[in-house]
Image (tube, rainbow, N blue to C red; front, side):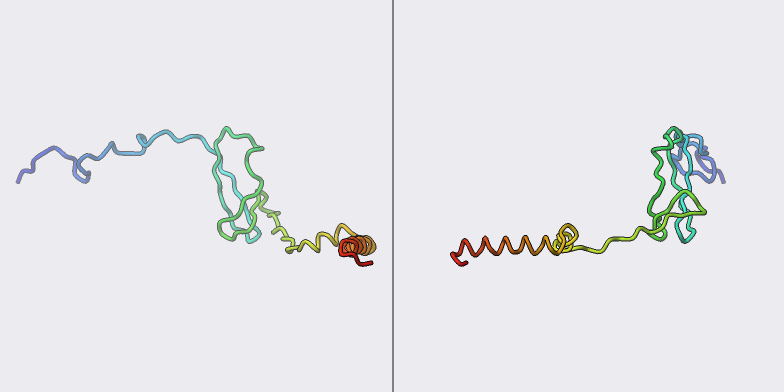
Length: 118
């Protein structure tokens, strides 16, 4: 039984050339490893021509969400978030109790003067 055509067995009709050589040019790159506090390693690739200053020292680990650094022995610690402060808390940081009393007294006197009270 003869089959027609001269296709090579195991290939599709219209398939491109075999092998990886025709899949484009791969740019040179550098692999940089980052470690988080749990010991998870994440590898990021950067262009080989990039300067050392442009490669970030820390990233957010996709495994844990913690910061990850390039030093495996000393991974960065999670930065402590400051609690939310109200406007009054910021004012209290800038003013002493004596200054607050003075400012409040001045404001009350101005209010009394506008209303005609003494």
